[in-house]
Length: 343
Ligand SMILES: *Cc1c(COP(=O)(O)O)cnc(C)c1O
Image (tube, rainbow, N blue to C red):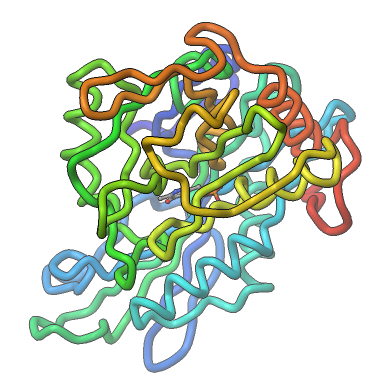
């Protein structure tokens, strides 16, 4: 694959596609410590065929973005939260933790080295960063790996769901993404492998993606599989599901805070019954990649429940979107400690 060339990119029409940028950060865990940490130009990994990541899915990742501000600085949104979540994911899969402060420094190094690829301010495009840690080395029994590779690569991206702030329809899934005491709270590869078939079925039936229900009763909304769910009730409460098998979205917890402190809404994390959607005036899916995707309708058991509109974003969702993205791009004042300047 050819290296990407920043001068040839059409910033207004970026999709959500991999690109091979000039630099990535890598570090190797060997003999009980992290070593050889630094930037490299090599976009390929060389690992043993017996690496536990390949057989037993010992892999965790993060997703974050770098934003260009109107005055041409580059900033990160709550990177310390990604560092902390990767720590949790690594602990769950018995992987060594890359120190949280060094994680944030490494992200900044990757952004700086590839700064030409951070899209200009103005149309919502960003640089997406993918920190990844995998278990390597030769073992065939079911054990934690003897060696690990930590890497962070990056690429410029546009919208994740086609349409941006245009509502999309979702459908509930017959499948489960994760169990209550499984790995739902960890951002690990296996959860995504399990979500490919349900996601494809949803796409085949004309939906943007599927919404998972709780794995016990198949009654309470969990999340979208790459984004968390929220609803705005008719009496202005920002509600989001509470469940032990949901991935704790940094975007979701940020919106929860902004809904309360910037918009003056009530907020609640609680069980949301898929049969009780009438309580909501608006609904959306949120995550770093998706930002906020308004949910036009949610299909369940053959019925399409529509929220605000199938073609237009609702007013509260729009306000949340403007506040969140304003903070991320540096045009709205951020709560203490939420943004870190790269350069
Ligand atoms: C990453 C992810 C999200 C979104 O989390 P953010 O921190 O907001 O990017 C939601 N659900 C799942 C399953 C995820 O992996």
